[in-house]
Image 1 (cartoon, protein in one colour):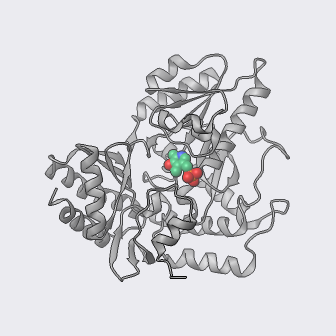
Image 2 (cartoon, rainbow, N blue to C red):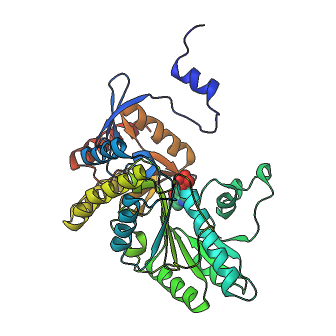
Amino acid sequence: MEKMNLEQQDKQYVLQTYARDYTNFVKGVGSTLYDENGKDYIDFASGIAVNSVGHNHPKLVEAICNQAKNIIHISNLQVIEPQAKLAQRMVELSGYDMGVFFANSGAEANEGAIKIARKYGETKFENKRYKVITLEHSFHGRTITTVKATGQESFHTPNFSPYPEGFSYEKSIEDVYKAIDDETVAVLIELVQGEGGVQPFEKEEIQQLAKHLKEKGVLLIVDEVQTGVYRTGEFLASNLYEIEPDIITLAKGLGGGVPIGAVMTKHKDVLVAGDHGSTFGGNYLSTAAGLAVLDILYPLYDDGTIDETLVYFSQKLNKMAEKYTHLFEKEVGLGLMRGLRAQSAEVQAGVIKNCMAEGLIVLKAGRNTVRFLPSITISKNEIDEGFKRFEKAISSL
Ligand SMILES: *Cc1c(COP(=O)(O)O)cnc(C)c1O
């Protein structure tokens, strides 16, 4: 049999659920990736906000290797030392009095959050509150329940029906107030909508909502799967917005590339033994990775390096928005979660394609946003080089 190339192999044996690019990356260092031909790419995507400390960070690599040499996994029926340490670290960094449950992905973290909210509603209220309100243009995951929680009609295809009941979507925060009834148990929101187009909400608007929900006894669940772990400049976007949610979910950047998800909640007694669980969730390998990520990032937060990076990145991006108004409407986002709202979907697609050809990885979001999610540890040199390539890439558009 003739040997297949990688693309043929992928197309024959991997279910084709992604519109894939077929560049074969074989090595990464910091925010630079190399393909099989030795061509280098500046990585402004960090695996969709996952490679929070870049590629091949020596401290993360060392932590993973050392942990693998001892124990990769024992079940959650045993106490797991790095899991307990990571939970404590996350709670301390957040500043909230919370407990943590570990899962393996963002969708799974949101499933856990919804279970906590549902049980809270079931046990605390005579009429058993169960409804969850989310927002249009939100994204909460790909499981049946989190797809249903996602406020984008295109996700609710009848192909996968029936979906769980009790989810509704509102156009704006303002509309959430009107939608709350006596069966509403929780409001689930992203503070910066990522997949929906890198759209941050106003701080005052969120603070008012948080206050209102508290008065009504409705839980506030903040999906920080993308915004968490210093993406916005603070450990959590909730810290930046100065609110205290009931439940927070995390995933993407927490393990630096090792799959991990987490639910944090101040309602520590809602779930009891047997209510929820995960075979892999919070195992030795993923939590050792999580600890290493926080050990790398916290000092950079503390000494102002992260702040400097995001200001520097922001200034560069701002220049692009100002200079290329025929391509971009405006700059959106905050921290290291940013976008350029393109004039059209065609411009968006053209920019992403040309960038790839020039050796720069950027992402799409929403219908017409070019999205930038660099690693939190990206260097000024890599930012400079990335924007040099960006300008070259868009010059022909
Ligand atoms: C990526 C993302 C998810 C889903 O995470 P998975 O790990 O892909 O399940 C959920 N919510 C938000 C806000 C996300 O950005």
